[in-house]
Image 1 (tube, rainbow, N blue to C red):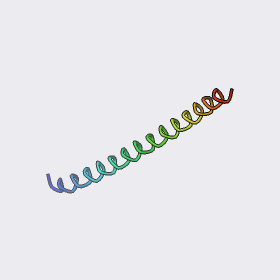
Image 2: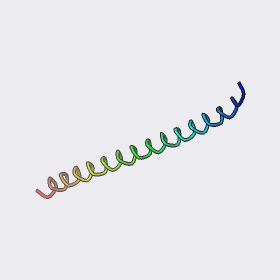
Image 3: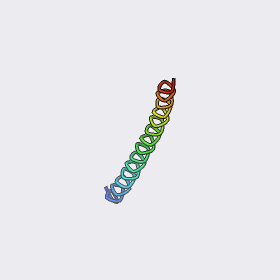
Length: 54
């Protein structure tokens, strides 16, 4: 039981760091998803334009 309080602080710090990493991963995944959708939308727009030009 002696020094148990110090362990709590370490756990809390680890949890906070893990949470930050999790948030960062979510943000990165979101960015990649947006980029992918943007590219797909550009492709669709090209196809639409080609159809209009015919």
